[in-house]
Image 1 (cartoon, rainbow, N blue to C red):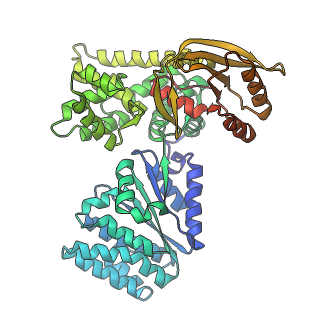
Image 2 (spheres, rainbow, N blue to C red):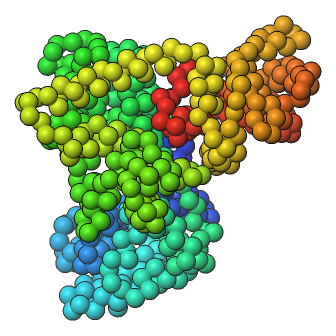
Image 3 (cartoon, helix red, strand yellow):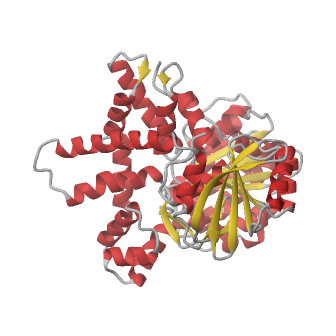
Length: 545
């Protein structure tokens, strides 16, 4: 098998891709819904947009794609005008050129107003009159739609970098143009969700409701498993190792792809038809421990960017403490012997950089593998002098083997035991799980039991006492159907004392009727994604079905 190429590299995201396609088709039918695609760096936003453009060869839609990250205004002006003319000529089967003057000459007879504006933009840009050039650039798509009778989809990758052009009211002016350009669809992306949400709500306030916001997250567990299988097509990998990689990478598409590439290489080097644990260990060492390993180097560059300036040392310490499991400001303050105000400033900066996220009073490094690397590679390199050649490498390999074995032991535990262990960690905190807030009490006397319904079916359950009363958690790996729910509700009514809170944990979810009924009965419903969100909050391995 060859190394993963671009097209093979794309996996999943079908629902988001379909939404984007629907928005493009809606534009053709006179309905416009702009889209803001937000998510961490390297989560797959650009790949998704490239897939959209490659699959939508619409004769009456022009795609204009611009990557704005670390670009200046001159780049923006020349790429905008060249891309627009190039795409027009390509769709009309006219001769193509790379040079802007040649593109103008080729398109002049077909798009006289558009070409006139392009040439004016070039002249103003050369003269340093960026404000005038910017205003003309923003009017260019509408002029082109008027001349061609076709629509334009403008894609601004890392859209927030427009603010670096030193142009007054750069976003406000863009907002004014978007309001009037009915034949232009804007798709913007950002790796800084907080910053972009602020721009949308403050600078583009009149348009905020006109931007559909889509958050691109790492793959969930089942998606990550599928991505691994997709990337290792033709190479055998056991279920346990596939589950471990899905958990270890945190479902991040980039890390899955890079680790799979390394596994493919090593399976070829060792002439193995099936990948076993030693090869997985070696692959992890190569890409994560080795200073020049591709993921290790990626993390090193991230840390260097975060720790530039006077507060570099403190930022590194805060990241190290977070990776060690110190998740509250008070715990970080005590661990680092610093004032909470000092910790708060660094945490806020890391949140703005989209490295750390908050859930309730808990702060986490969003990227699970980055957190692992900080804990077992970066922090140790800063603190430990390797007096014996290869000692650190040997320790890291031992750590990976231990992580593999521990994951296997935890995965074999019964679901009820996993949930009971998790409940021991709750401390009267509130958390957001998949968009809904839950208050999780401090529990005592947690018991695993069997619940028998009138129909003779058995369910695993957990009873736990809190200050508010008894909680009952009913557990089921398979889907919960209407009949199952009826039996559960009957048994809940018989219990003495009556539970103050009942929760249904179903890894496969509830069918629609059962879900509606459960919500009517004020039962909480936790599925696989919500459970694994809790597992992540408390630094536990994910639930494996």
